[in-house]
Image (tube, rainbow, N blue to C red; front, side):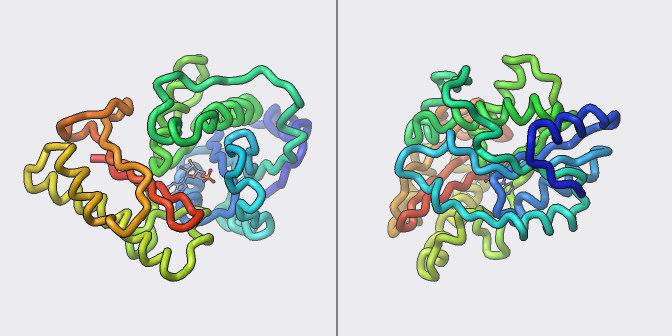
Length: 272
Ligand code: AMP
């Protein structure tokens, strides 16, 4: 495995690759969620490239950019164990100039994450487009955990005619149901227990639907009741295009929850 830091190193490597490339962009502090993406990329491609870059443009002022967990050495070991070929770990100055041509997420993205974190997706798309241009992958792997991000990346690939196959990957959870996240390390013991209510509320919603409850309003209310002790930012029920829906559409529904535990903002969802 080779660790690449500069554009020149990555571009030279890229020129030498002739087979298929699986690309997994991450912000590091790798956990089993990331590892599942990397393993899938390993299974499906000749060459695997992982990027580790805490992208400043997707953090809003006052968010956790400065304290975002950084575990470069452990991350490199994990990548090595997963038989990654190249890890790209650039500096901020390598990725950005002072004033740049920008990518703008469509207005319709200003719901849910886009509403509470205005500008967040512009930063995500900006960095992902740069990374796509550098790595020119055959397949790029994204978690369904960040459902709205995944959808916007699919739209960017379509709108900019990028010849890249986006592979959506299932959410990986702790054994008790909590969705894995680099931010889970911020939780204290009590918050870690309380956080379980998020995934429980999603499973509860799935069980209600199993019992023929298809009213989104009723499901939302019942979910909120199960999370009454949490500071819930939103519960949303949308179709796969992120339009809010009134009635569950089997095979075309995503239920999303965002809750704050202290300073930590956790998101989770279920695809039904
Ligand atoms: P991040 O490092 O948080 O930017 O995440 C990098 C990629 O890993 C994104 O495509 C995420 O959606 C994905 N990811 C993060 N957590 C999980 C998880 N628990 N299960 C599956 N994918 C995940």
